[in-house]
Image (cartoon, rainbow, N blue to C red):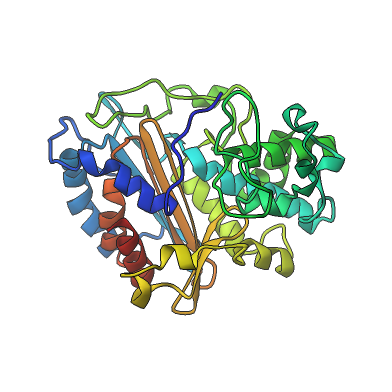
Length: 376
């Protein structure tokens, strides 16, 4: 049974709030110099990050940070600082557990099946899959892929032994990993193909993602960034032996950036399906823009399909974060501007590095300002 951190106001706002108690400065010995992958780098941004990130890692007890930046629909730079494990420097090839940033990958599997006409966003999943725990509950018939991808299944984040509805499907927002697991079982039953195989065929291979996997692979050996607790102590990694549609994928920032570029290029989907991905399916503006944030609230705030979606000053942003024990990750992309950022850390204190890093990159000021208000 999975036990994961619950969802509060937004994925990013919750992560910062949960880490506030660990914000005291404390040095972490043995930090490595930055490792830069060859790319069309942005020298000024990299220079600022080289001056900032090692200090952040020491002050916040963060073992390592790995970043990929997208500009004009291409990876402009990849850089990594710190240690994957004690005494072993992290590099751009280091693999990180991306936690709930798995969800957009799994959502994309479904969207590409929708674009191919093999799945409908609004069909009842009960035609192909009913969890045995719901066999006697007629509300199961209301569950659809759209409802699952926009976190309106009515399920808890994780079941406590038995899967039950906490509310009627479609009634209200409720962040749920169980909803994604249910959706994946439906997709497997309807297509007759293992979900992990579908992800590899429809998403990973077209995007050139050779360093991303739901389950343990031989090439994981020696490449995994160990998670670290708030005091900087290494923990055992969580490596799945059976896919989890909502959690525990391992990847590199460069590979995840390739995925985001696929979204920018509308890879594998038509215009209508891409629009459904970004469109607000679960509106949370009233909830998240209550005073004193009203004056600076985005035009649109909520969940699309697999992503938090924001419309700020006429520009669309899709964002997701991931936080498990000893790891924090964040990725966002603006398909309109053809840019985005991926930040992976192997530390529970990782959220404390995110805003300073994005500030140092020096782009997307309106979006960063919104994140800062959520965090505050």
